[in-house]
Length: 366
Image 1 (cartoon, rainbow, N blue to C red):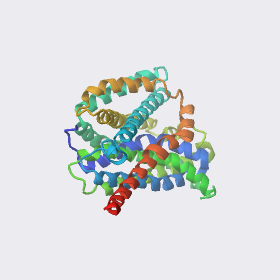
Image 2 (image 1 turned 180 degrees about the vertical axis):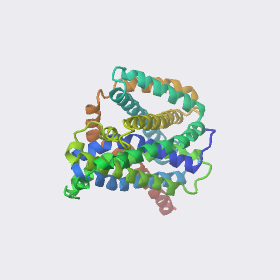
Image 3 (image 1 turned 135 degrees about the vertical axis):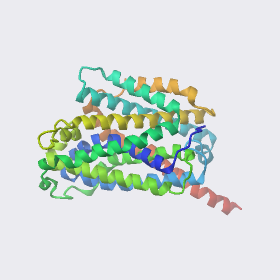
Image 4 (image 1 turned 90 degrees about the vertical axis):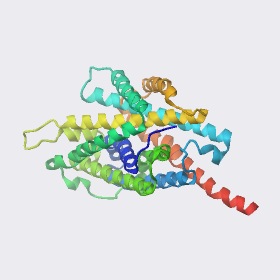
C-alpha cells in the first residue's frame, strides 16, 4: 500500500517529533496544577508506561511481519471484531488529528495573530499536511530529519536560557505528594508517550527492523528526560503553584529569555518550533487515519480517500474544544482515559496476551 521506504532512524525521528511537538506546551501546566513542584516526577513515571507501549507494539509487529497494526487485528480477534476495532482506531487517528489541528490554530491565535480566525490556521496546516501525505511517507519523513534538530534546539533554548530567573529552591521539597496522585497525573503525560503506537503503522515501511525496539525505547526515554527538564525549568522560574495557573507556561518562559539584554522576544522561536512540529504530527495522524480506513475497507490504495478524510478532519477540528482552558481541562480529565487507557496501552496489551495464549492453546489441543 505504501511504496515508499524509510529507515529506522527516520522512524525514530518521526516518533520523537510527533510526541515532543505538543507535550511540552501543555503538560507542564497540567502536571504543576496536580502536583506542583513534583511535576517533573510525573514525567519520570510516565516514561515507564510509554516503554510498555513501545515494547508491545514492536513485539506485535514481529509476530506479524509486513503488516500494519490494523492489518493484523482480524488475525488476532477474528474478521468481524478485528474490522470493528480497526474502524475505531481509524476514528481515533482522525479525532486526535483534529485535536492537534485545533490546538495549533488556538496557539497561533493566542500568541501572534489574535485577530485572525482559528479556522484560517486550521485550513492552512491541514492543506499542507494533505499535500505532504499525498507526496508519500518517504518525502515528509525526510523533511522531518531536517526539522527535528531545529525543534530540539528550540526546546534546549527554553530549558537553559532563562537560567537567570530560576530559583532551584522552588523545586523543593521533592516527593511530598502522595504516590497515587502522581501516578494518576502521570497517565496524562504517558498518553503522549503512548503515541509511539503509531509506529505500528510505519514498521512495514522500514528497510530494516533490527534496531526498532531499541530506537523506540530510546525515543520514549529521551522524551521523558526532555519533558522532565522543561517542567523543572518552568517550576524553577514560576514556582509550582503559579506554573499550574499559567495558560501556556512554556511560552511564558520563552518570553523571559534575554541574551545579554540585547536579543529579546525569543518566543518567536517557540512559535516556529510549534508550527514545524505540529505540521509533522498532523501529517502522521492524517496518514495513519487514511491508511487505517483503507485497510479496514479492504482497499489496496489509500490516495483516493485522502481528500474526503482531510475534509472530515477539518470539519471535526472546527467543532471540538473552543478555548485553551477547555482544552486543558479535557487533557487533564479525559485524555488519559480516551487515549492511553484504551487505544494506546490496554488494547495492544490485550492483543499481545491473546497472541501469546492462542499458540499455547493450539499446542495443547494437538
